[in-house]
Length: 241
Ligand code: XBP
Ligand code: MG
Picture 1 (tube, rainbow, N blue to C red):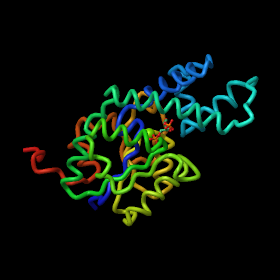
Picture 2: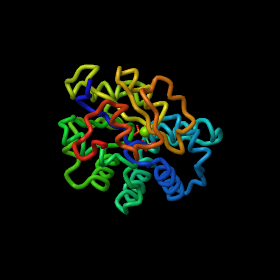
Picture 3: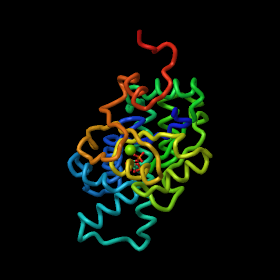
Picture 4: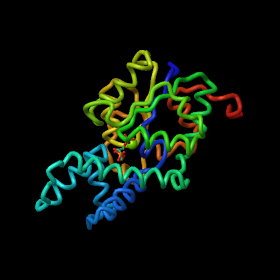
């Protein structure tokens, strides 16, 4: 059954963004005079918590036992995260974070084939809009029939909330869509929403448990291979002779 919709995760899937997020977090900490430094090894552990605000809270509560929380702790976390988002979107606008191999081709081919596109992500709408404009062009946000971001739902991945939010707006049956994810949390979320899910791994998620995925790829550089695995229509120009 050819999918009538492809639902894309963002971070790690559309683009290999997580190390840029990590650098943006560290810039925000330094700007606020905290000597906190999330190196790659620590960030890999912290990534098990989805959502930047939730990740900062988890770090404080598990790694900084002596930290005295300000009176407006929620406001403190929110502001620190806003500073981080400013640094992250600046890196996007500088063109430092390209789309992953095969993603642009897949999106173009899906549009040609009349397959609906959607996004289900834990990151913020501002990050998604900046990434799409930078990576796919000024009008690319309009290509997506539904864009589910960050705080629009109460429970972030691995809860299914964000995928269910997107499905409600796509008005499609279970068999009519597939998801593309990069992480164990993302796969658990999309599978809990009943969606056949393909995985592309990256340096932060390579060792995750992808049990239940329809297939796992290092990336989509061999886009025809992905089309065959996902039973997507091969565009005319790509039929192998
Ligand atoms: C991955 C996440 C996000 C990013 C950081 O999102 O968990 O929290 O790590 O972005 P995705 P924010 O579902 O797209 O893989 O700081 O904006 O949360
Ligand atoms: Mg992801």
